[in-house]
Length: 297
Image (cartoon, rainbow, N blue to C red; front, side, top):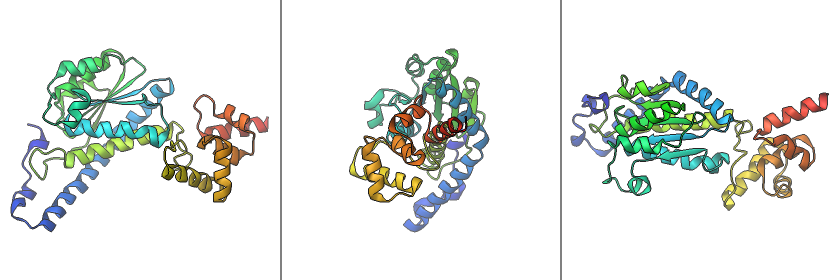
């Protein structure tokens, strides 16, 4: 039996406690989950570095998970485009049963190993497959990782149980040993917290290393509403020291393209020169360095 299925002695009387004590206990367990996730830092960093090589060559990242783990993967993949301006297919979350099953927990295909096998059928040696399973035993994930590995994809397992049998299918094993839940077996709790922070760290670190931030600013955000447009203007303000009106004008002059507007403001070069420096997916920092090298020659 996986350790996430054990009974937690710290919460054995939880049904007798007042609300404040219940909430405190749940948050204490979540705090422990963060610390468990922290122990996986070396393995997660290895996964980021190895995924970076694949993505730089045109590969894509695929998440495979069921239940709470799979739904967290859907959230992470969905948020990548508005946050980092990625192409919609760079991160894809696969869930057994597809969209209807994500919304309806009564559609439970966690044991559908062949579905995982089929969902990973399009992966190639350029791609990255990340399997997410709190218990470390989900057969849907096993099928996906096995198929992905045969295709030569980088395979990563994210689990909350050491000694998972699925480790045999993974090039990198990311283990956050969260232990028993406050409510026995409810891995949407502590294990879900650990999975969420590990996914956040993985996708964000991968995008930062790919040049999709400048400093700690979201320069590749997609301004699809007034709030995000204001954030884009603020990014240019913070990075350049320009005033709000000047930053808004710089953004307008570049057709709302934040990296282009920022590079132009920082370098003083023409729009065409900046566009060429950014060509090929270079980030703002790399483009600035490229311009500096050309200036020195």
